[in-house]
Length: 427
Ligand code: PGU
Image (cartoon, rainbow, N blue to C red):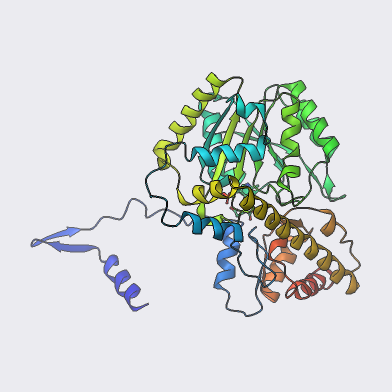
């Protein structure tokens, strides 16, 4: 504190001495810069950390916690780290990242025996997790389809808007969520697909839609794929939660597989933040399915060239962890078991939250808590009710009413339910 005061006083001086000459110090060129608005998701984590209350609960950020509310490092990750320790150097990866990690990632998204992988039709690079994959893709879109828009669902993960904005790609929206039914606004979504100009870019959440927890059924995906095909749209799948919807990464890739069966060329962002708990390692994969091997090689080289001036090449440790796990049958089996364990704990918490609210005699409907899937519950709480949860109960969540079910535990579910009941029934 003392230090900061002394520093401020010194920096406020308007003149300074140098070599016997007095200089007027001019104001910095950034002195008109205003503070950036708080991030709607990560800003919630900051506020949570700053709250000294022992009762505080963080159901803001989508980060998995165990039933004691503690961050989890998966056993398969611990084991992979042991195997890596002392056996890997810390050299730069190639610009495109780890070839082995990429190959394993493509198998997860496109299918173990995908002919597209064998035919080398997929241009893919290791990315800085899901965010980095989306951003490189958005830049690629801008560079090679400069007049195109991107169609984004309403609502979506807030950072999608930032990513495509900073890549200078204009955004349009398509209907997705239907607030009254708390389900998919399927008919309106299809209309928007039909009404978009031919060849539009559509951003789709592959599974466990964030923030709504509402996914199309298999049959609805088939219709979405068909309509996109009729219009020649380009689907870009953001798959940040593979495994978190059903507990099985294979099942959660169904949307993508349907589009592949229908002969689409697609783009795909994969993240290991959630399903391997590698949040801070920033490891993911960006892929673009091309018409042939030659085109894929060209696209890959361009994706690499977009990455080069930004961060040169991706971080190495997370890539080693992922490739160690996915290329060893026993570790992969352990991973699949652990993903299922995380998904199941969340499903259990959904049931408990709903039951607790019903036990309290809440007059409101809460079935959507158990109907929705993935990490989030789109609760229907208003921004004002969220503010009360935070100010009166130290419960932190985003103002759109999204509850990260991954932060709900046997220890805090009753407290959470009680607080929700209070702010939704009492004035
Ligand atoms: N795509 C979607 C749909 C996401 O929900 C997230 C993370 C990402 C991509 C990016 O995740 P990476 O960590 O870059 O792989 N959303 C979380 C995490 C916090 C955040 O906003 O980045 C969330 O709470 O919505």
